[in-house]
Length: 265
Image (cartoon, rainbow, N blue to C red; front, side, top):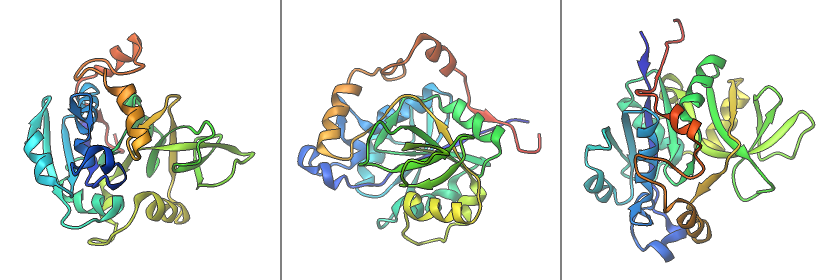
């Protein structure tokens, strides 16, 4: 039998770097047009067939919960509470007990990429990788997490110089990983998924695979990027099309529940 895929959205950040333009609101509630940024991500997940979402919340978590409650766009929402800043890795370990699926989609709550998340999840399963990272072309950017990828889409390094054996891409902050691997993270520790766990897993010999999306990653990490996101995302329709989406992509994204087969099927 096929089984569903849960999603975790990491939205515990305080958004200190953009506080000059957003005030004291949590980053997840930073306004894009007349709606919060997190609403755009939840709409994307709903469009692509995901149904059960875990919000990893920390700063101003009561505001986030009051806004979205336990259900929005037909999504079932559960909340993983961080009592103190745990980093992206610590937040995932904290949320793992709420995960009901064997594999889970992870999204940073402060960036948007208009990728086919169902195709990403399927590629992860078919390749039988331990961890998958959705990446976009670097296009000369050096102000973000860079991933070195070989010609077989295997990740072999982070923040490294261009290699003759592959290319360098930007980490779009969207991942696939098994619940088992997340459960092995030390409980109660503060750590970064990107700078602590990814390099460690690579050194341990785990298979990290890149899924290359030809588009771009839009984040709201600085006032300048937040302003650009306003211009790019403000007209995206909730529950409808999104920037740059073709007719073919609109058709393929309407896939119903996102489900994967078990590894042994």
